[in-house]
Image (cartoon, rainbow, N blue to C red; front, side):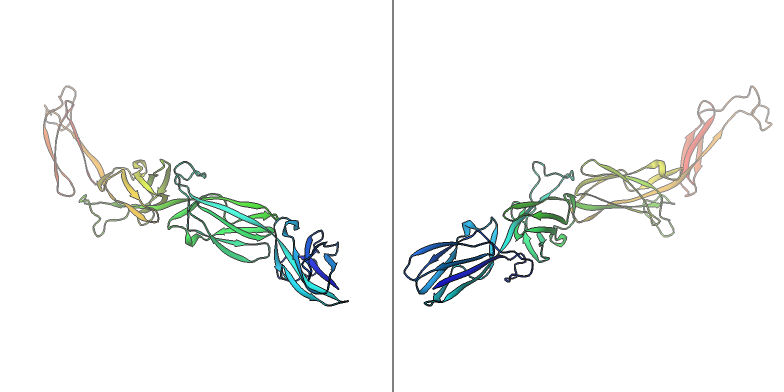
Length: 355
């Protein structure tokens, strides 16, 4: 009798030869007949093969080494055994093969945020990557201890998309592109790229008008908006932020020691710090918000005067009337605090006091 079979390219992997899916020619099939004798048949331009064999149980076994590289069976059963009656043609079935390749990628911790994995920067393991293949099917893979992930997919355009919810808290992408779409040829391994993530946190602070100069923001003391604060992060990079209407400022920075420094030139004229410490350095952990403190500023102004010897008592320093140096003047400010100053050789004195 005769045994036959059919081979095709199951592009969509659904187990059926659909319209537009090609036949698979030039593939060797090893036929083992009922007597244990083997024969080789080759699929023709229509994907068909045939062999004349003694009646009885006959096995058709596709020689995978003769398939195109990267083709994986998705339809039929191989090997396949059928009973061939005398004078009859019996089909060993339709076998479909889908062209596949591999997509890979690498995840790492970009500590310094420079977009490359430098010496000492660790791999990023345990992160889920969603793979969407050329057929629109999705699957999830996880980066291993070396930060690598891999998936076998149908040939064609494939997208790798890092699931940000599985990243460590506070990590922001600084290297690579996500999601990333690549074309995966059959039998090939294609990289979706290296993606780096930097651990980041937030530094905040608060500025206020310390009217009474007691080092605390009391009831009725206003916030201090519109003031520039220079943030120097753990990588020694600087950026400027501005206090808002509530006197607050905030900046997202790489994890590590961070310095907040109020730019005094942007304070209202005559304001002097009376609360907090400036500049202030704090350690900002990843995914945390760390306060650089509350800084209070008291409005100050200058009071000054001049002493002289009014020889003729007319209330005016006339020509020839001397200045009066080394005289102590007690200044009592608006808060009831006293300050002692001494007139200089020109008879002048001055002191800065709360407005």
